[in-house]
Image 1 (cartoon, rainbow, N blue to C red):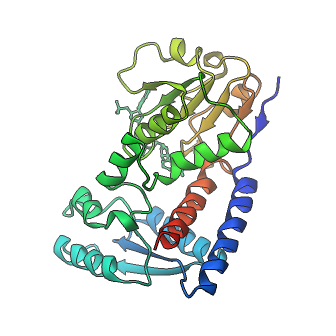
Image 2 (cartoon, rainbow, N blue to C red; image 1 turned 135 degrees about the vertical axis):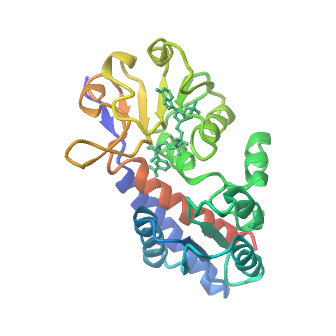
Amino acid sequence: MTAQRIDGNALSQILRADVTKRATALKAKGITPGLAVILVGENPASQVYVRNKVKACHDSGLHSLLEKHPDTLTQEALLDRIGALNQDTSIHGILVQLPLPKHIDAQKVIEAISPAKDVDGFHIASAGALMTGMPGFWPCTPYGCMKMLESIGYELKGKHAVVIGRSNIVGKPMALMLLQMNATVTICHSATQDLKAITLQADVIVAAVGKRNILTADMVKPGAVVLDVGMNRNEEGKLCGDVDFAGVEQVAGYITPVPGGVGPMTITMLLVNTLEAAERI
Ligand code: NAP
């Protein structure tokens, strides 16, 4: 069996076209959805990420404000800026690019963002809303994974989903979203014993570790759906995921490639969240 690929670029195009349509409708009512992106310091990867986010806003007809600050910015000054953006009616979403310099407490900064503008979904209020099934912003990467499952018409009810990784931004919210859709969920992490025995039972596997080849063909049940969140570099410096794609593709029913899988969906869901923040006004 060769797995069907779930194309994150193609799905993103469809979802972004819908964002543009809804943004146009909002503009007709005098509201232009706006995202503020704050970058502190010179981290090269972060610079690429924020550039991509700003470009995605522009391409979808959303207003964006990019604020670049030197890494000498104090925590107090950053909190002041967030306070001002919380009050700014032209801004509906606020994103602080992580990681922040060491002298700044990232959690404190995230908690300073108004939950109504927390389009990254990292605020403790957003996490609590997801935990309790209340309305709130879902973190973009696992939200994108859910959209990918929806795009193939996958019925999660009663299925066994295994999430490898338990970070606050991917693994844990992913598990909660799958649970909300009535999957039976197992979360694996670095202390999990016999990962293979668990993944072999899975109908859906989400790999969110950050280690190449954490999931190989012998660990996958034939026909399973495999979503690869990982972003790593191989020996040649090429982007690759956590999954041994060539091997797992021969066993799985569906698989997401890297690049062109979950990655583009993350930015797409940021646009969706920003649009929804503006629609809720
Ligand atoms: P993270 O905070 O480093 O979390 C990694 C998780 O993997 C941890 O929970 C860790 O367990 C677990 N882990 C480590 N070694 C393991 C092993 N041998 N077996 C099972 N679990 C193991 O990373 P993250 O922020 O969640 O990101 C994960 C990956 O996704 C990274 O490659 C990141 O670059 C990528 N990512 C991609 C996107 C995208 O848009 N495509 C977005 C976000 C992240 P412990 O908790 O026990 O340490």
